[in-house]
Image 1: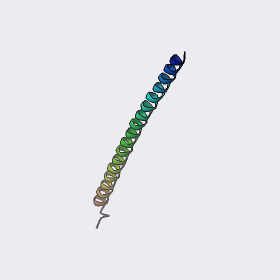
Image 2 (image 1 turned 90 degrees about the vertical axis):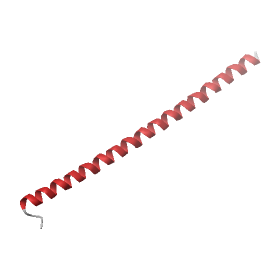
Image 3 (image 1 turned 180 degrees about the vertical axis):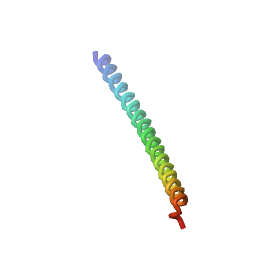
Image 4 (image 1 turned 60 degrees about the vertical axis):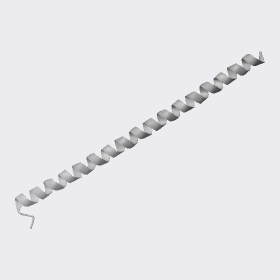
Length: 67
């Protein structure tokens, strides 16, 4: 009976350990995805800023405001 109880306890511990590893892997994957999304948003923001600055320069040139 003790062997069966020990086996069940071992299996429960093994399952818990595997669940922890899986959870850690998912957290790492989510963290990587968040970092990638953050970098993409920063790049998009920078590109929009540059386009807006270019458009402003074009307007200044067209209206003669740029000297």
